[in-house]
Amino acid sequence: MENTKNLEAIAIQVRRDLLRMIHAKNSGHPGGSLGITDLLVTLYFDIMVHDPENFDMDGTGQDLFFLSNGHCSAAWYSVLARSGYFPVEELATFRAIDSRLQGHPTTAEHLPGIRIASGSLGQGLSVACGAALAKKLNDDSRFVYCLCGDGEIEEGQIWEAAQFAQARKIDNLIAFIDHNGQQIDGTIKDVLNLNHLKQKWEAFNWEVLECNGNDIKELIETIRSAHDKSGKGKPIVIIMKTEMGKGVDFMMGSHKWHGIAPNDEQLEKALSQLEETLGDY
Image (cartoon, rainbow, N blue to C red; front, side, top):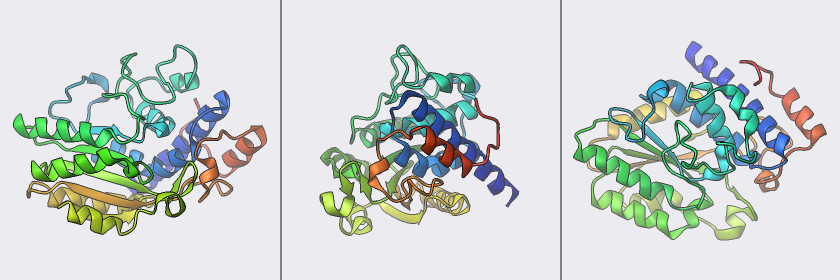
């Protein structure tokens, strides 16, 4: 219980960080970033075996994470900084010219913690399949995690990767679907209804788990369950029910906050709902 409270406190600070980052440059994607914060905090501060101080591209003996829906970079940058990959103060350079913290993650500036450029939607799961298969071939027992958006899985490449993973029995791969039901043009149901999402993944011969992606305790339990189910010939996907804009009442549940920065008044109102916990950058 104490650890859960600590993780929740970190998540509050990450939400403050990302809102201030996006506001400062009047550019970014707050809705999805707020929604995935609890997962990223849970992975980096509780679940994953990783070494921020000695980052390398191979990650041998470590867990790897790939953010396929790269437009949610602000949350990831904050978590990477808060977990020690680079100085927290660098968050102030988000989306600035010549910054390492661009709108979509990139490897061009060799930012610790980032192994692929992402944000061209649909590609991350393919990369995760390759990384996980490499670990199996190298007798590396660690996991590969990949986060995809529910709008993103309208892309055909996701399903090609899903088919490949089950065909090659990549059972050290754990994918997450950020199932908030929203995308840039409206609700998932109205734009391109996913229909029977769990059954789709089961039909592709994946082990499917479901959880509340904004409940850290439940996230931990579900990921631990995924670990128990690994190594049995099936890749694993966790469908997370999340709330776009989680933590900020006027952003929650609306696709309109997919890619719009808060103005001064909106930022002040949002931050008033998120009490500073670790100190702002």
